[in-house]
Amino acid sequence: MNDDHARARMQVLVRADIAAHIRLGRADRDIQRLLRVPARAVQSVRQQLGNAPLRRVRDRRHAGFADVFWGSARHMPDGHLLWVGTTYDSGTPVLQVGSQLRSVLRIGFLLGHGREAQGAVTSGCGGERCVEPEHLLDHPARVYIADSLTALFGDPRP
Ligand SMILES: [Zn+2]
Image (cartoon, rainbow, N blue to C red; front, side, top):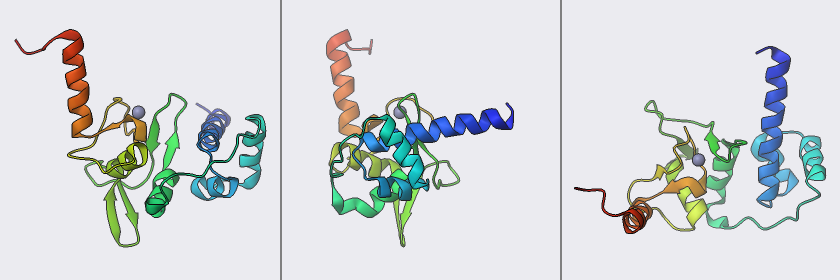
């Protein structure tokens, strides 16, 4: 892959990411700050989308963590959200605000489900390094899915 091709592909990915934030209802200046992109990049994508309306982004209580979360994740064209921020040596994504360290998966779950996760949080989509809030499952969500599958297809245990 030559440099021009790589640059073009990166531009497409950045525009897709900006578009996802616009659809979530974020203001231009918030998107510029989160993704570190110039104002004209956001304005051009917004024009293309037909000026999607602004909505208030929910849950201001966790605004500091939410900002770091969205600023360190990139929307992929296939619907997954790729973590590009800090990870532990083990690969587990971690998020820092001031002196506070939090699990990215737990913050993502909170942002997507509006409640604290119970038990371990895992990505239910199989996407590599995916932290899309809607793709994250906690223990009760996994039990619910397992029970639903058992009701549909029967008990997998012999
Ligand atoms: Zn995913």
